[in-house]
Each structure stands twice: as C-alpha cells, then as structure tokens.
Length: 182
Image (cartoon, rainbow, N blue to C red; front, top):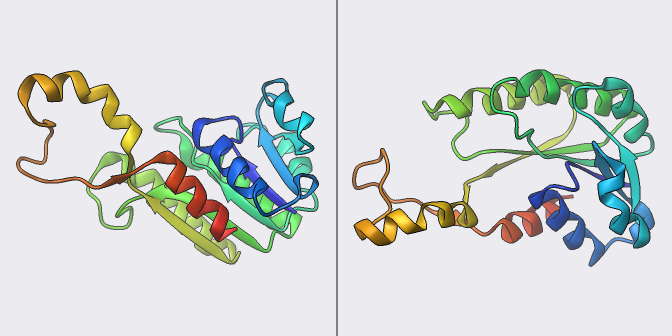
C-alpha cells in the first residue's frame, strides 16, 4: 500500500493523481488532516485516513499496512521538525519499507534559514534506518506567478541573488517524480 501525507494540498493531490495512473485506488492512502476535504478521493476509491502531523495517534493508524510513504513537508515554517519526526516515528513503528521526503534543493549545504529544518528532517530519516529517497525539490514554477506583476514592471525577477539564475519545475512535474519514486 502507498500513502501520501498532505494529500489534499496542492502537491499531494497531484501525487495522488499520478499514482492513480498505475496503482489501483484501493492501494493508495490519502493521509490528510481533514478527511471531509478528501471526499472526492473517497468517491474514486482512494483510502482516506486522518493523519495530523501534530497528533501522533492519528499517524499510527493512518500508516497501518503502508509499505511506501511520501512525507510531504509541512507548510508550517519553523516548527516542522517535531511534526516530521512524529511521521517518521509512526512510519518506523508501522514497518514502512520506504519513505520519500519532499525536501529542499541543496538542503545539506544551503545557508538559507528554510534549509535548516529540511536538513534536520533528512538527518532524522537517516537515523531512523528506514530506506529513504530524499526529493530535493526546487521552487515551484507556479510560485513565480506571485512575483509576475513586479517582474513585468522591472523587466526581471528581482531577488537576493544579484544576477543569479533560478531553475524551477512545475508542481505537476515534482508530483510525477514523487509518484515514480514510490
């Protein structure tokens, strides 16, 4: 059985869609904070289970019978590590055979504050002994749309990287990659 945490989020839904191309719906667990928001997935035959990163009891039951898990990083900046640790602990207790984690590009070397909790999560995963795949996602191309008005006004995307360039990928591409890894 395959499980995706944060399955009602923007990336999570796309991963579920990608998995449904090759995996029967009754082999996919959508692990979500609010099962009511996943009624459309239930209608398609996906198993929906409550899984709240801040409530370990929900994680233990959500991961029962799961072999491969995609841990989608919490959207809560600062405070992610304890939430991620509860998922990793639950995955270990459930006997998950593979955990994939949506980390950050260059998490191991980046000086960015955002990289700290990703790097720490990667360390917790390594210490768990679970076979793992670390998906070091770059910025979603869709995120640049927020900066589009300023970019059009200035003729460039302006940031703290001077003349630096960025590479990004569409959220759907990262979802397809995560599904392929699982």
